[in-house]
Length: 89
Image (spheres, helix red, strand yellow):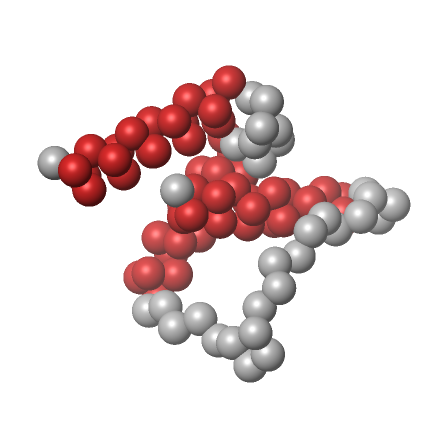
């Protein structure tokens, strides 16, 4: 569930940054706070996979409201059900 929310946040931030480059009057959007000196340690292959996952979220979810969009609500519910099934099964 946390990964889903993190990907959603990153997708919205990238979409907002892209939109702000296209339209200079728009704000860049929220920025995820990270610890000073934080450096992600992904291999080039992992970085490509991460970028593909975020690109998917940009294309499919970034323009939707996490709290009211039925697709995102159903996805959240399915992820919650999967978590419960794996911890109790």
